Image (cartoon, protein in one colour):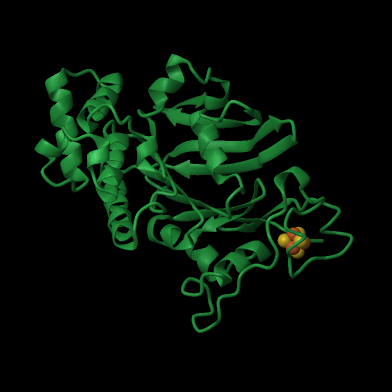
Length: 333
Ligand code: SF4
């Protein structure tokens, strides 16, 4: 099987926040690649840096944050553009946002203005990125609403966001994000704000659209079940570090990093222990302002090696077949 072309390469990305409390190293040296049509899941507890990674790609990091090192290369028509070098308010990144790369958020209300109909807002995105008349843009918007399973799209297009149910708003937001046929869709906790039945429908919809449109997908979630539904590969983050990444089947079958092992144990239906009690990871994530020395997970790790793990940051170890881990247990002599 031939490898799909490389679409986005993130290399040693670090994004920090500066405040009176100190410097928060929200993302600290993260690297990953994503290929056309592929699904990558980024998982970890809240505060691990997964959403800031997405904000960095789109250059929408909040004001007190800054990308301090790294490259984010988007490959378009064989040309590579480093998104870190672009003016975050400039024309070029605005064309890429919503064009090549689109995003759906946990809360659809954040994506829509309440004072315009969803049709106004979807057609505006279409006309910003594609040359077409207002009536053509409306036709495309109706078509996209139909595609995401919106009932009566010809009528619903004129509804205001607040008049739609949570599930319908979620569909409308996905329609808006996909209206310019992005090469990459970033979904940040796409199903957290909707109930379980709608969750299953939204996941099914995203899977179908990804396959039909040949689009790459980055799913950011704390929910490993979402990743197992949608993703080919997984990157696990802890306190701003990419602690393990591997093909999804490998992570679920043979996790190596003690944090990944703990995460999977706390979701028995995905981990090995179908009949085991829920076994959450002990302790809590330390304050990101007081990051532990050495391995950031050493304060909670059952495999902690004294005078090693609390002193030295583990290097990234290649285990083969696209499996990488940052842990002293796997350092070869
Ligand atoms: Fe645990 Fe040490 Fe590995 Fe960190 S480096 S995960 S503390 S064994």
